[in-house]
Length: 343
Image (cartoon, rainbow, N blue to C red):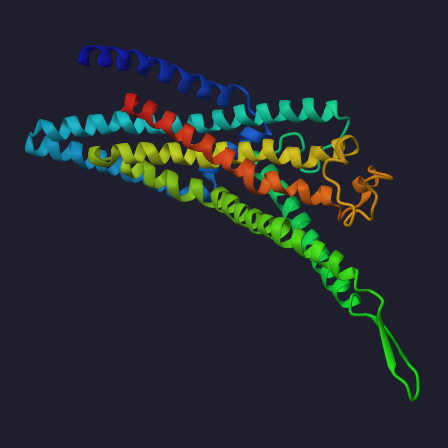
């Protein structure tokens, strides 16, 4: 059984090296605006920590090799050569990073060109050569603005109808009695309707979307700056090499996979309006949509504060982020196994 596992590992190593080489060639042969931005990560201010980590690794290798020659201890020389191999493999993965970004950008471009051409529409956030991080952040800003606008509007309506419900008429007959008639008590029911939708759907969605926006911005700004350098440093020493592999996989997943998933899922938020006329009766509220569900269900599509706009927040706030987390965990598990094979 041990021999079988070693044979399988020996077969996987060249396959993984071929994949990384293909990604490297992809990054070199097919330059473009998207890949130029990906390559500039290493040369920009965010890449200073990566270069520092690589230089530290080189100094450790050189110092260990010199120490082994001075004291004539082969253990240090073997350690230096082994670390030199792993450093070369780390650099190869770093260069292949651009190839992975190019592949995902090409996939994103093909997706947008096919989907928006089918709907005969234009994307609000995507332009040719756009990076996934910028597109995903643009969509997050858009859905964040929509959720805040809906929250403010529903709060105004809730307070307005609540105040109108206290309106009353009073008639006083001298020497007899005074009679008071409530003229807007029914508006309290409408106010409660706005309050229920606000507390049940809009506020939880707004909280979830705001947290996702902060997390996505943190991933975009700090993954390459901190996680990758720490991963390269951890790969220097054999006891922490596996942890370094996990952090490299985490950096790839956070910087590439998470924005990639958000680009696809948030596109649904924009495209769902093109299906509004067909499915408006499914997410229509007679009170919110001014009793237009039975007479004119299409009118809800033109109302920016309709229940349809509230309904399309729900998948982005709760369901699709969980899908992204599940895909990320699966990706990390697969990358961890691949890294164990490569060493």
